Image (cartoon, rainbow, N blue to C red; front, side):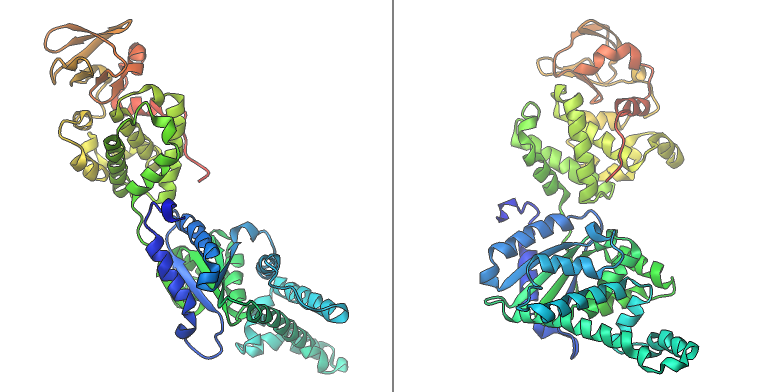
Amino acid sequence: MWEKDKLNRKEFADFLCTLIKNSDKYRRSEGENSYVIALDSPWGTGKSYFLELFEKYISETEKQNGLRIIHYSAWENDFWDNAFLPLLYALYKEEMLSVEAQGEKAGNCVKDILRLSVYLGKEVGFKRLETVLGEDAAKMLKGGVDHMLEKPEQGIAPVFQDYEEFCRAYETIRGMLSDYQKNLEGYGKIVIVVDELDRCRPDFAVQTLEVVKHLFNVEGLVFLFAVDMEQLGCVIRGIYGEGLDARNYLNRMFHYVTHLPEPDSGLYFKVLFEEKRENFQAVYQREEQIDQAAGFVQGLADGFRLSLRELDTIWKNYMILYDYKLKNYLRIEAHLLYFLFLVMKYRYADLTAYLRRQEYSRLDEMPELEKVLDDLPEDSMLQGLFKHSVWWKLEELEGWLYGRSLGAVGSRQTRIAGVQGDTIITTGSGEKTVAIEEDTCFLGLLYAPDFVHWEQIKRLSIVEYMRKQLELFEFGGE
């Protein structure tokens, strides 16, 4: 299955397997039965892609590794009023809560599950949960004490009734999970992957952590949280206040924090490309062209600090643009250029304002493009374009006119004077008439399909032309 591992993540998957299988050795203190791992990686760096491969890997080798894996998407369940029941249901679907019980015993199990769910749905539910484990007991009893003071004739018994019922329900659930794990022949660990916790509403995210820490503290259970620790820290502070040491709080929740290796954006581009390769036969005809595009995209991703998810969003817009018009642009330079245009529009919704604010007049002045320019061949048509002022009108531009059968036409000072039918009239080193071929290109900016619109576009600046070409494309909903 690792033939799909285009980002070279198998080594990390093997590391996680080793960590999980030997996690009993790494517990921090007595009373800690389950083991909780955080897979820390910022939004959009490929956590979900990795988890898909990792879960399949564990499933296909579960007998060999002694691991059984269960997936739980926290974000898909945060519409519920508490985090306990959705997670419990995920285990129930995997038959982890099936009990050999009928009649009164089975009924009591159901009652205990419902009782826990109701308690944890209350505003004070998690204060009760913490106190079951001995934290801040005075606060837990406050409600009961208030009740006793208001109605002393009922005696002290009602003070502890809720507490006793909660403890019994808590032990019931732990016992069911423990029995299941012990009876699961051939498996040493049950791995529960909790994905997209940092996308949940804040109270649900915190509740999920607390539930796992306390209610699912069962030997043989290993939880793997895929999270952005920085974002999760913001969520924690939003619940408990800005003064809270969120990192210390999370360190108490997780026994081990590991990090997803940095992705290679060039490799990821090739992954995306291979999925749709048959769509691009007219343009990407040779492997060196694919390598050139991958290197170009790698430079853009580094320069503009694009995550894999952001790169995926831009790629989808590129595919739409390709189907709409770019499939008629046969030069690879056109596709690199428009990918660049999409990246700049994604990063700077108002590129004109950004360039003016930074006082950039040429694209090669943008530090984001430094690596791209360094990697471009000296004879690339785009080199000349990047050295022109983005404020110049198209009719003012000077550069080479290219064609496959013609080679370079004119000189570096060639300008387009006009377009008549399927011919271009140039000036600069004497007036010439050049036939428009399917691969004709001027300065790496204008291509064969563009010349028919010359009269409408000639008074646009480079940046205005770029905006016009992408006016149908907006980014949103990532």
